[in-house]
Image 1 (cartoon, rainbow, N blue to C red):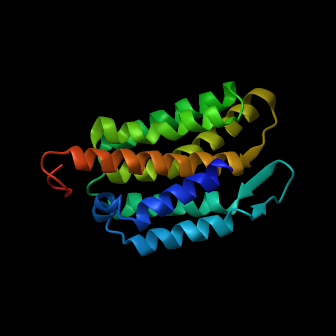
Image 2 (cartoon, one colour):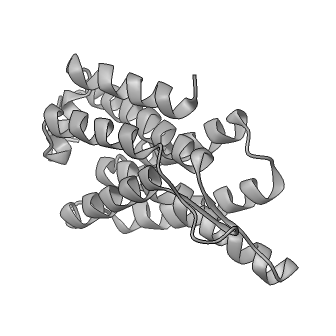
Amino acid sequence: MSLFLMSILMLAVLTLFGTISGLLDILHETKFHVLYLLLSLLLLHSFIISPMPEIEINAAVIALFIVSCIILYRHKRTVTGIGLILTGCFCIVSAAVTVIAESTELTALLLGILPALIVLIKRDHASAIAAAGLIPVVSEMLRALFEMLNLGYGTVRLGSFTSDVQLLGVLVTAATAQTLLILSPNGYGEEKI
């Protein structure tokens, strides 16, 4: 089973049984919206757009990138500057890791944990969930830019590895955020955290 499918199933189960309801309340989403998004991502995952041999884009990657940008825009008042700075730093770290290491499941797990660190450091749930969708795409673009500058030739691979990292990041970040909400002495609620 691929990491993408495993992450979709885990997020669907967590959403269906109301396990991440506190996080959904903070993001102002219903569980049906999240389930619809997960189903759409599952269907879009099979579409690979490749206008040139050097470019490979998975439609699910672009869809989750757009959703992440929308989350950042909708929660621009609660997103902190430190959350955005951490996202930028993690993009650079992620790009360096993908240049040095191969695209393996261990690398995907390492990169998927990065957005959860924003929740642990700053407790900024909206920017952490958005960062889970943004970091893999921006780091792949930085990696392609690095290849072009060093080798004179680069490839953009927004394929299955990027979608694995995105969904794994959303899963780990959602679980971390919900755990912190449960352990918080003030309970749920954005103002109380």
